[in-house]
Image: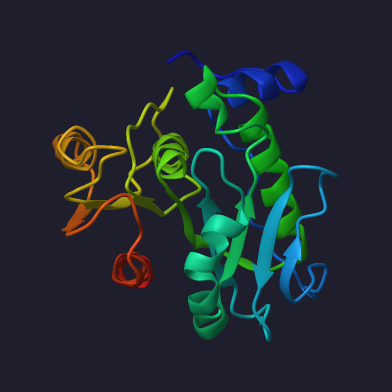
Length: 237
């Protein structure tokens, strides 16, 4: 990798093209800029996304954040429901953006608009809520699981954990840090076959030195509740 140099738009574009995110949590004396409960992000008129903020966030105890990414042809609501009940009970924030088009940019040919939009969404969350910089996870299902792996591996200095449910691949342009990785996959998945996807990814990532928790379940291209519970338990461990 080449050295980073300079500042401004050119550097931002270069970072975005590598899947790099610049948004970071900040100290907030009086949070409250984000609506409590489930709401739209409010960044775009069309494809936008959802945000869930539990009640009673204490700025003296910054909250964990989970970023959830939907599958191909999906939208934020398809994955928000997987974690919203746990977020309300355990007190963590959930950000779920919509992809700009039918699926995530790298799957369509290269990093760019989805990285930029996610960065905007993260900046909004970080400006309105006290977030624990050591407890930020990126997760997703199917294409969203693949994209979570891509972004998590590229931004291990931001994400402590990656929660990949039935992912197909991981293709980070760069790697940074060593996030912990949770992967679940159904042994009868006909969309993304387990042997070519979940099993192979777990093996390759372990060989690369990552801390991987791989769990296989009996079933197809789905996200069983127990896999979500297992991923979150590991995230909070």
